Image (tube, rainbow, N blue to C red; front, side, top):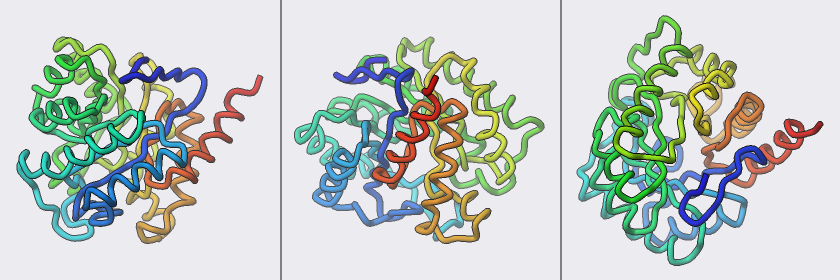
Length: 279
């Protein structure tokens, strides 16, 4: 798969997507990289540590009630946060840039500014025009699964068969994207987005089943609540749990890992890939 100017060969190794939240209220690092300077410095640091993709997000999607109240923002506010950062990263490096948004207006401007991927946590449920925008720019689209909205998703997530149902909804998102003319599609089962502890564990255990959809798989477990629930740890004490979940995800078919701790998870990926690839 060609993304921007880079070729991604998912048969050779796992790729690392570094999380860059330019928000005041994200669950793990809200406020830490809110200024343009701090955000760009962090992006360059993650690239140095082995990130292949920098995923820039300007609006928090943490569950309602987790670490305080999440503030929904306008497209213009989101643009004011992400565009200066994307422009600076694009000028400073040749790394692939992703825009984490559910708004087509933000996606359009971010792709003009230098992004090559639109990472839509709603899987085209919130704004279907994202598919048209992605196709217009000949960009790559990540379609993630979510049950409900960020405000409601963790109130009472319910499935009869979480793997089958998530896979079916992602298939619908893929069909929408293809109909709009998107050629490069990556899928994400949406760990922690409208799933309880058991749902998350089942998706990781049965991740290989998503390979039948025929697209690279992105997985994001980094520092998430299910790890804290299992280990009884705060958000900044979940690195070992994240490492375990990343290794399992790679062994079960993940092609891209979306992480906060790039240096450490890059090392996890290198070792897991070596085990996976040995004859």
